[in-house]
Amino acid sequence: MNRGCAFITGASSGIGEATAVALAGAGYDLVLAARRLPRLETLAEDLRRTGRRVDVFELDVRDQAAVAKLSRQPFFDQVTVLINNAGLAKGTEKVQVANPADLDAMIDTNVKGLLYVTHAFLPGLIARQGHVVNLGSVAGRWVYPGGAVYCASKFAVRAITEGLRLDLAGTGVRVTNIAPGMVETEFSEVRLGNPEQAKAVYQGMRALSAADVAESIAWCLTRPAHVNVQELVLYPTDQAGVGHVTRR
Picture 1: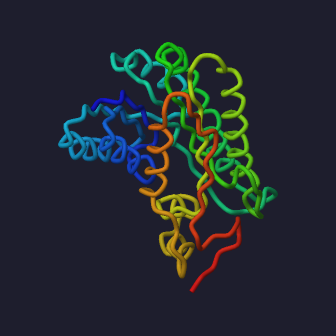
Picture 2: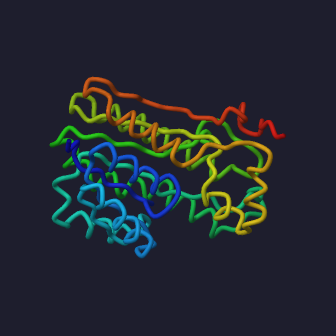
């Protein structure tokens, strides 16, 4: 079965990588993009054994010119699913002492990068009645100390998703926001810059895995065309809310 072609940003690790694996298994051809091309090439080699077509491209979503260049590639007119997964958090400092470079990185990647990619793909997705999936976060619904700007970026993702759904009404394009709680990936290591501190974030509790989130994304994509899962909020059972974690 061929379900179409999915383009995934930030596909070299974590949720992006797991989603590529899940969608290959579900019958999608793939176009994978990330900054770390060697990791993408290794992943693609594995996924091609499933019989799916897999293309890879080095891409920093913050680079609008690079996104525009990518949109001129031959694969572009085959994409039926866009998964805006690229995103990050940097630092846990309060705004008054935060590093401005970290603030820029979060806004430029999580908001502007998502917009650059989405804008480039929308004409084709409208023509093919495709599906846009944005990776948000529970931080796009609830704010916590030291997370003002990261939360703001994910609030923006939720607003963009809802606004996009309204703008696309009548086109047949579906738009979904996926909002996970704690997922054990490289996320905390990137945010904290310290592997030991990152490991401690998940100690004594069972977090979601990247595969858990990927399975949920695949489920949303494979609903009948008249069904749009508008938003899916996922918590591990050990997390009752932002900052409310049961540890053993």
